[in-house]
Length: 329
Ligand SMILES: Nc1ncnc2[nH]cnc12
Ligand SMILES: [Zn+2]
Image (tube, rainbow, N blue to C red; front, side, top):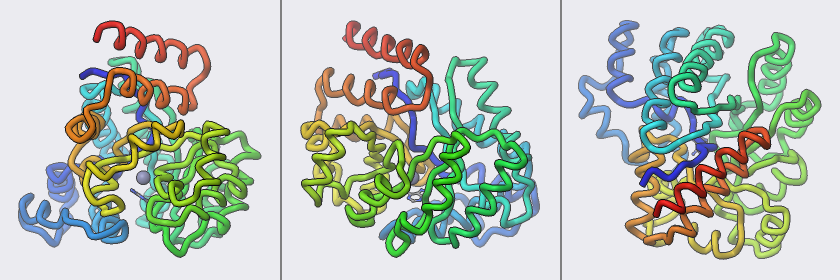
């Protein structure tokens, strides 16, 4: 299809493919509880968000060095390039890596090396977003953010992820206030499994610029009206929603009605190594279920660039690529 898009909701650690888990475990002599890739793959059946997160956090322990972060980021960017991604805003979970003794500077340097190389090789532009865990105390996130600011870590924004239910955005007001004071962009997962109220909190208390997922907004008509009026971006992840059972089947996915309602939605891959594929697989699955028109596809692509944090002139260039794609259809 080759639709040019911005990938705005992708967790670096969620691109860790089973083959790389095995090879990194081998490289670092880490004993995994699986003896083969097939045995590992057999674990990839999820009943909800938490059942996925348990495996996701266990597997990412194989990432140990700056080179590992370079390798996983490069492998992702190569796939992204092949699936039409022209701009990426990459999430990573700093707490996961600090917790096992890594120096965050190595993590970020490895990721940044690959991002710069992809910019030179394929013209993919980028931003880097550190996501804090909502299942961990907000004081821990605050301490880490203060350190990242003091050490001038090269991040462009912060996000909020991990287990949603029981961990409302209101717990993280101080963290988000500090981030905004320092000119960082702010986004948060909200309304993936959690209630529409968490989306209100993300907007009113965290003052987010984008809501990650946000599909549960449909339970609250007033909220939908507000999101439409403000053209607040929602980064929707169709394959993720199916695999984590937030939605039953692709045919039941609310994306077409969200588009129809005038919500600023775009399509993203979340954790593609776990959910059955990258940007292209998400679009292929949507096309099979909904057979979107050229205009619907172009709207999703335009929304992705308009929702991104790239500057206005780069945004215009990317939007022109979408129009060129439309005119070739
Ligand atoms: N879908 C998701 N929701 C919350 N936290 C995550 N971390 C990685 N993927 C996530
Ligand atoms: Zn996510």
